[in-house]
Length: 244
Image (tube, rainbow, N blue to C red):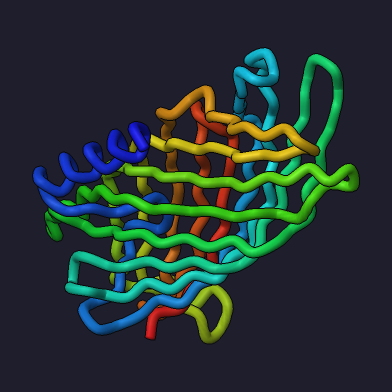
């Protein structure tokens, strides 16, 4: 509960400064009453988690995530986000080489994102945001369970380049704009686990990280994006989307 209050406090401070957004394709949000439907693949590696019940040993986390997402324009600058799909989980102890593989199962998340300041002449905007994400993959072959829960809050800067005289690279798709974004985030992740009569919670060793990425927009409607996250984890996400 204390950690949740910390994250909510950070989110509130962002909101008091302006508005909120979350990691992923922040340079292109739907206008009020419109939607962006997208599909994304995410790969997470190199995130360390520890549990005092295990002697504070650090385990490495790997996860592959396949998600459908939808953004709804609550206003021209604020959008609500929902994700649903599947995610697997692999825990590896580098000291003993013990590996625990959890096959994919249901994953979902909710969030809010916004651009709270923009200068159209410079093509510059600032944003911040938050999201909640969780999944409970299948049991391992020796009946170990795990449930991933993550809260994050982020701030970022976006530089947008509008293509005035665009030509089609591949008919009928025409590049109409591209953007670069970079920012910082606070991410609190934990894994509740059980094994026989034992249970505990693996907590992330690093909570502060950075991210950067590119978004390409075709015909003012089709979005192709890629993002990398580092410091707290080594991860990337690739996204395809359409605004309607």
